Image 1 (cartoon, helix red, strand yellow):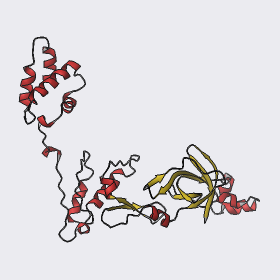
Image 2 (tube, helix red, strand yellow):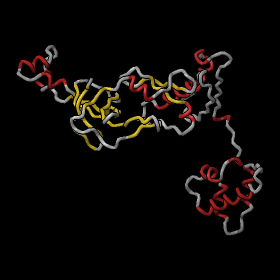
Image 3 (spheres, helix red, strand yellow):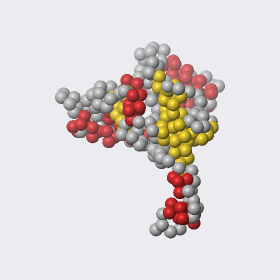
Image 4 (cartoon, helix red, strand yellow):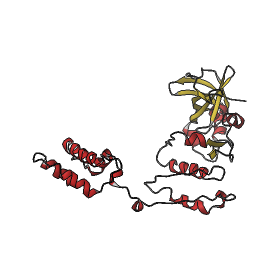
Length: 293
């Protein structure tokens, strides 16, 4: 059943009129030939607002006042909704194709059904290699990621502060540790946001047969890195407070390379200091002192 009709478009998307108060990020679509072009709602506002005078008495419906005054009450029930084109799913390519154009004025817009979304995402919740992270706003459709796709490439979770980025990552990690996935996970957590995942080990939802996830949290004080395992740029970034000159950097790099001529050579901080000291030649005393300081 049609939901609305496009009235205009611009570089940011298109605008359609509808009587349905659609939520932000709900899915809609329009037809282009035999293709259904999927879109998302980005903004909704009333097409017309009641005059302020109609709103003074909370005990009287503004629609009744409008009708009494001879207004067409229906005009206040429409919404001006902005949409953003996502594209159509090409099953041969396994990805979305953007049509590179917005729908023309007069194009009919339909609300996307759960069946249409399920046809695009055929990963089922609970099966091996799946990660269920919630539902799409306005529907009961599960958002299920392919663990293979998540783990085989870089994944970035981008949102405003407080929008739930850490929570989303936590849900993904929980799904990776579920019995149907049993994936090993390593988390670098500088802000201590994921220590609650330690409770997973005692959560029976994550147990099955002989599988029970083990969670190990290593505190910063227990992490030791040999100075010889750090790359020269990493060492410089640690000791440089912004006053290290190019000459000092060159001397420091020379000392490190001298100690690393043997790839298997492990050296200590004292040995590094001694090697830097040995580079003194009378003309670089101030640079050597600066490095050692």
